[in-house]
Length: 151
Image 1 (cartoon, rainbow, N blue to C red):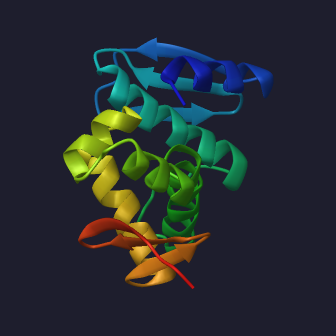
Image 2: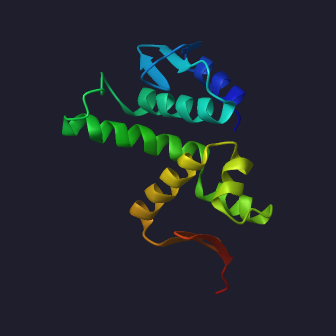
C-alpha cells in the first residue's frame, strides 16, 4: 500500500490530511483532521499516516500523556493496527517469494522505514512467539526468515 493509497483511504473515512511543519511529532490526529510532518520522505509519511489511522480506528481521546497506562495501551493498539495494515504476515511471505532476504530489503520492498520493520517484527514476535505458520510457510521474526514447510 502506498502513501497515496492511504490518503485515499483516509478520505473514504471522512478524514482530512494536511502536511504541516510539525516540530515534536511525525503525525497527529484531532477529530477528523490528521497532520503529517511536511519534510518527511514518503516512507516516513506512510508510517506516520498509518499510525494516525490506527488512532482513528482504535482510540478515543488524547493519548499524548504516556505516563497514563490507559494511554500507553491505546498507543500500542493504534500501532498494532498500523503494523497489520502495512506489513501483514502474507506481505512477509510475498516479499520472500519476490526475493527479499533481509530487513533492509523488506523495508525497501514495502516502502516503509527500517525502524518500522524492526517494530513490526518485534510486535509479531511478542504476539506469536518465535515464528508463525500459515499455509505452507513458517515465518520467523528474529532473525527474519521465511521457510516453506511440508506436512
